[in-house]
Length: 151
Image 1 (tube, helix red, strand yellow):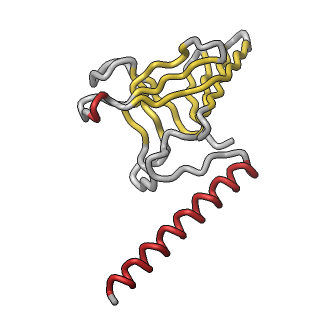
Image 2 (image 1 turned 90 degrees about the horizontal axis):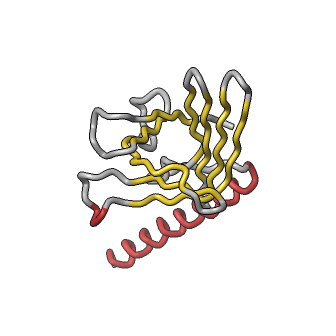
């Protein structure tokens, strides 16, 4: 009898998760934004500003990528669309970070950076969600910090 109840509980949880996923995808289509859950923290819109430029990019669930770069003081804006891939470390090695590779529509590489840090899902410690990208996997070297923006 306990096995039946355990099976019933598992079925209820599976149905709930399936319905939540379906509802999330429907809401995403309606509002045009990604609903971020655990292990999907990289999705959404990210931006960074320097004294010479403003960079913003958006990673969508379907693998598309939108990038815009505004340069100061000439007010020149570049917009690029394409695709992205997340490449995990070889063999699941924890000594390496996953890589974010983005490609424009003609196949040229735009980003090829390690994702050094992404604010975890449901984090209450960090005030702002941020993503840290680095051209290499060595700590204390060059890094680019992007913050999640709402659109």
